[in-house]
Image: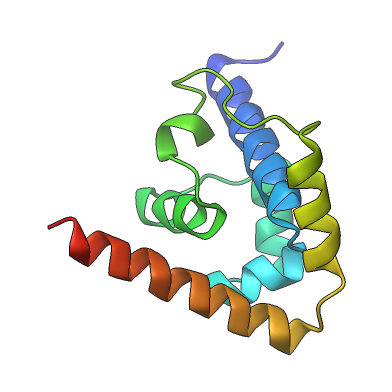
Length: 119
């Protein structure tokens, strides 16, 4: 019998997996960005490992989603069938790892600049 806690970890894992796929990232790429080991990302996505609040915030920032969405506290906002998202994921998947890392740093700096401008 599944406990509510196990269901929450499974839901969180599924949301993390979906957000990562929509971002066009591999588990290895996410692990590098977040300073984790790839098996750790795999265990989290499988719902077999707890996620700290800090880790959850890092995942949300990396995938550009809210922690509320990851925790399924709000309705599903990502549409995996959106052709624009699918195209973006395919194109990102074609990038060399070094180019993808540079792009992620650029996107993060753009998000940081937006945050500073809204203060």
